[in-house]
Amino acid sequence: MAANKKEFFYGTGRRKQSVARVRLYPGKGDITINGKDIEDYLDLETLRYIVRQPLHEVNAIDRYSIVVNVKGGGIAGQAGAIRHGISRALVEADAEMYKAALKKAGFLTRDSRVKERKKYGLKKARKASQFSKR
Image (cartoon, one colour):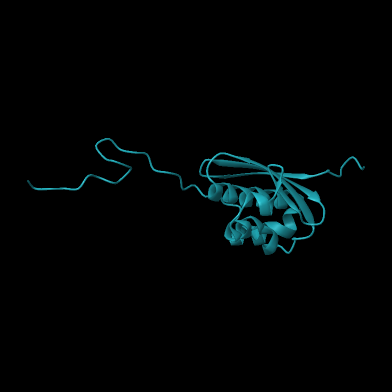
């Protein structure tokens, strides 16, 4: 192995409370999440689509094998975090080829929307008990 050639490319993705650590290896396109195949880890097709979006955007579906370690949050937040991490790892792999397309699609921007805090006197962040005059 050459000294300047890296074995894998790394990217960290975040969404809500989820953090995904993504490694891209040169390979045939299989995705492993927390030791399970993507089909076993994500039951919904829409979530699997979200994870694969950056690869479809740059036509690199069968160019890389992906190993993901993700924790925190729910399943949808984890899928968003994985997408963010894959996008960052692709840019690390080949910035001049992938960065413009991924940035235009909005995959390199961290989605900063998080749960709003609960306020005192209310039941949830904005939900109040029903108002009555008497």
